[in-house]
Amino acid sequence: MLDAKRTDESLEAPTYRQIVEQIRATIERGELQPDMALPPVRQLAGHLGVAPNTVASAYAELQSEG
Image (cartoon, rainbow, N blue to C red; front, side):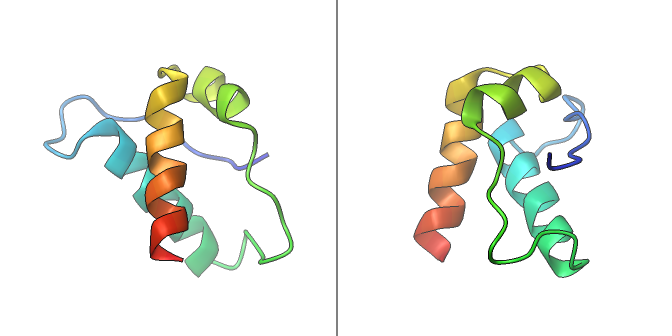
């Protein structure tokens, strides 16, 4: 599973943007390859302690950016 850290509510960036940036960082480090799937929305949401819609928003943004 993607080893995302918990989000930080003290940051100005919305939670979904923090998730986007964590996933991008994982890709840039080469830990997430093109053939690897992201964890299901509910699974990652549970891991991070956020609502599933927050993770879905992050995934949607990543998908729209390619």
